[in-house]
Length: 178
Image (cartoon, rainbow, N blue to C red; front, top):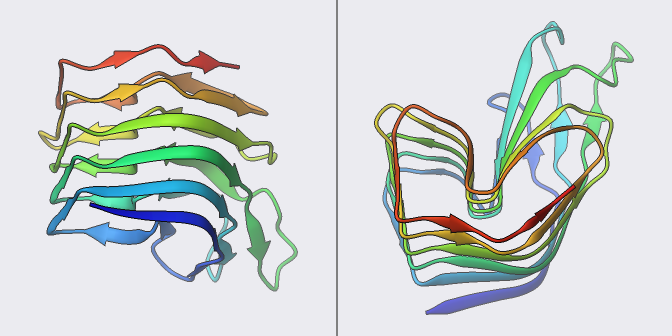
């Protein structure tokens, strides 16, 4: 497999509010390891900032494909850098962050894990999942685990997935959530 280490990302997000090593995955990502990321998306807002959700994951912001045999380890530092002309700072309704995927939207995540430390101390309301924040539209998360430490300023924290209308099976969590 492949391992990406000590990477610093500052993706420019201008419309979909989706970020990750891969913004959208519609194919197959297999045998990929990520270690020690600093992730600071630069988000440009051009519309009414009242009800915007952001989808962020270490490997993919949105997964519609297959992610298999992947892992994220080390320390993840996540911070938001908001820019717009209207002076709004706290415009996100929710930040959906998953250590593997922000939202698994009908995709498959299997045999993958997070075993590191996530620190997200911004003022945005965060919805954090150890593997994915959301699992929707029949998405499948199977044979995954989370054994990392997750520290956030405010929001909901869940070991595997924060919200699911799909299938979650054969997964476990031993992480410290605070």
